[in-house]
Amino acid sequence: MPLKNTKKTSGLWSSRFKEPVAELVKQYTSSVDFDKHLANYDIIGSQAHARMLASQQIISQRDLSSIESGLKQIQNEINNGAFEWSIEEEDVHLNIEKRLIEISGDPGKKLHTARSRNDQVATDIRLYLRDSIENTALKVHELQIAILKLAEAHKKTIMPGFTHLQVAQPISFGHHLMAYFEMLKRDKERLLDCQKRTNSLPLGAAALAGTSYPIDRQKVARELGFERICANSIDAVSDRDFVIEYLSVAAIAMMHLSRFSEEIIIWMNPGFDFVTLPDRLCTGSSIMPQKKNPDVPELVRGKTGRVNGNLIALLTIMKAQPLAYNKDNQEDKEPLFDTVNTLLMSLIVFKELIEGLTVNPDKMETATKTGHVTATDLADYLVKRGIAFREAHEVVANVVSYAEDLKIELAEVPLEKLQEFCPTIEDNVSYSLSIAESLNSRNHIGGTSPQQVELAIGLAKKELEEFPT
Ligand code: ARG
Figure 1 (tube, rainbow, N blue to C red):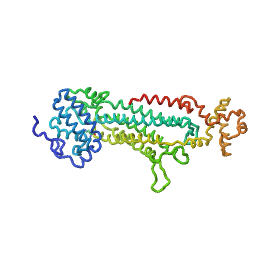
Figure 2: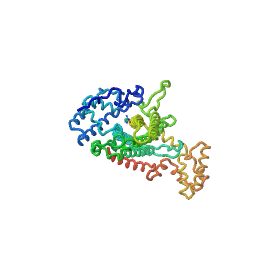
Figure 3: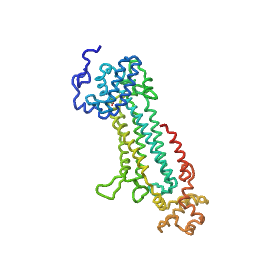
Figure 4: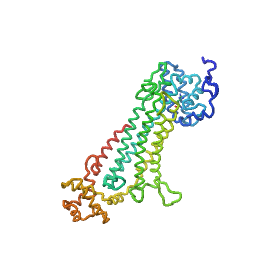
């Protein structure tokens, strides 16, 4: 039998309050505008909770059926845009609960038994993040495939490798691309690792101390696909480490994309002209008709700033909070949603960039012929003829200085002149000074010789096949 006077007066949290919450405070404290993004997860969590309550005989089967059909209806209303969200109900959880009570009456009022919004929201975020991690890992994986394909086509394409953005040594463009493959591989590993700590069930912790009802947390965990249960109820409602972990993993991944973006931007500069992007992936200028700008990689680079900011936001939100739940935690959602969306979109658009890239091997090779790119090879040549590396280094430095004065390349210095610098040099030196030989000679695991690049690509292919999708 419903009790008298249990109907909540509009605008009051409960009968404990003597006046309604001020309009300004409602607006300030409400989160529904953004946490409605969690609606689907909130419903899934409520369904599992209600089923557990019924199987533990905390509510009746009839109550359960009514709750289940009410939640289904709400899900439909949300999906087809008919659901009316209101800041009167503060957040996604209260909006859905209020609508459930409208639809199913008294049974709806029982759904919140043995539960608090504190363990409810923690559960919702974990469910959301679990899916988001999977989506992100998949997009990383797809980008890896695109990079691998390009690397395979360019294992023999020669480009200047840079340190300090100065020509350093010749490398295979495929090898250079595979460096990004490696970064993304670690990103994917980190994602799947933080997935483990995300996949833990907070529900059952209630407000902070647990609940006096005979709940079955294992059942809820099984139903929601959680690998484990949060072991401490206080930690369960206050922990946001898993969000911070994701945000840091995402920041690292964006940093990788940002570095790659920077290179594409440099390579697209006419001074380099190593690559071109199709018009569909570029934008123009409103004043300079000749311009074709790399806005997409520039934006990826720029958005890295937001993603870094979101990580710092969460660390700062959490840093001084006493246990257990505090409303500060409500601030976790916008940075998280923003990072998930930004990283996903950046990965998707980046794959397009890689697939759309036209490589200009001639320009790359021409650029390799500047900067005395085989200077190290000459030093190594001397070392192999018994000269100590430091001495060889000095001899080559003198040759380079001579070549610089004449404005010629090291490889163009005549043999007789080389022999003046060091009599040990023989005519087979030209072989060592050739760019192709420079590449071929770096033939060890992780080296840039086309043979090693091919091996690395083969291994990478296997790794991709093993990815659990
Ligand atoms: N909207 C809240 C949040 O995001 C839900 C939890 C509210 N709990 C509370 N005790 N006020 O954190």
